[in-house]
Length: 113
Image (tube, rainbow, N blue to C red; front, side, top):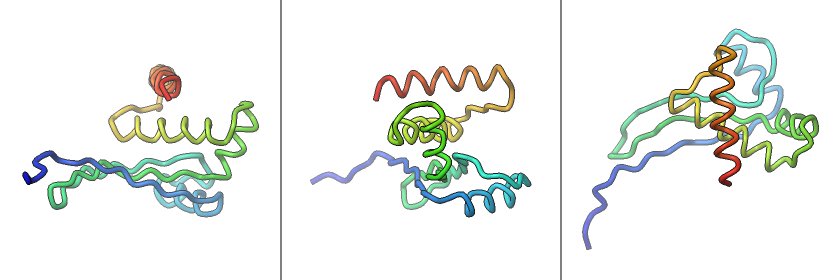
């Protein structure tokens, strides 16, 4: 049996609620509000495994967004996770143009799932 010589990349996911997300958002970004997702790039190698990062998802905000946009919780969760992964691989939504480009990729990813 041969050893696996390929590196494996991991993303960890944390599901949380409003209070914890608001606290995290304030601590990390200085914003005293809740949000749907925060991504933390790691890019650390441990035992031939690459940890790409961690995505923290606020279940309460995902549920509110789903109701607002008329989609299921699962559909909105998929969009939020796609958004978080795109942040990990280098996308930003800090300008209108960046946000539009990121949304287009999210839409494409969601259509594929």
